[in-house]
Image (tube, rainbow, N blue to C red; front, side, top):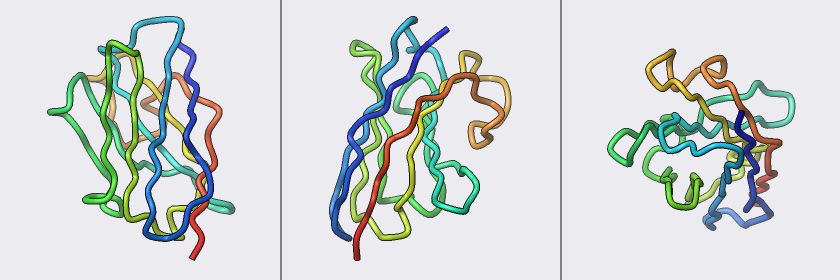
Length: 126
């Protein structure tokens, strides 16, 4: 079992930046696939980015490619999402999720992930 806690959300103006953190406890999750998802009001939760094992295996939604960067620090048991050039449409609750078996399922699918954090709110004003 692993517990995930997100932090770093907040209110930022369009064009600004935020860095979200996902801290894991209960188990070392360096071998896990970790994903970021977001859910805006009235919309379904959707894939943002994921990382498997190392920085060489990173995936992004088209809507954030070139603006967001996912990374991990295994020594700190943490995964980060650096968000630059933020837009109002990035406003959502952001969740991190972990999958202990990276070879199972699509990293873009919610159902692939076994563990979820409680979410952190990101609001981008225009």
